[in-house]
Image (cartoon, rainbow, N blue to C red; front, side):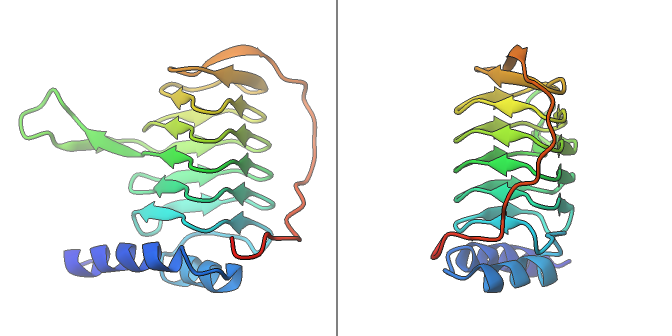
Length: 177
């Protein structure tokens, strides 16, 4: 894809991300940005994207407002995941040890039944296991084991979380968000 078209699409996605209509935003995300986004899931407004395609969002998943989702190397968000405001996910970064700072990276996976707190940053190549809770403001630099509660910079497991099954309710969507 030509660079001007690519950056134009990402600029349009930023504009569309502020349209106060879930239906219009989601149609753009699905059909233009090629995001896998089931009708049972929600992406609240202000979302920004880096990459076209490569983003898969599971069923009954909620992505809070003003999320930044980098899908250049692949980003998968599982089913029944609840993500608070201002998430930052990076799948690519610069290699500071190589002259010219070339881009390097790896896919990010967020497992089913996770809760990701507000203002969490997730770095390239990380897998967050099923059922993980990541506390607000954490920076996830390494894989997190399933069914744990994790906090800190860098994020580390602090305790186990009881296993459970549930389906998030996404039938009611906040208006103008």
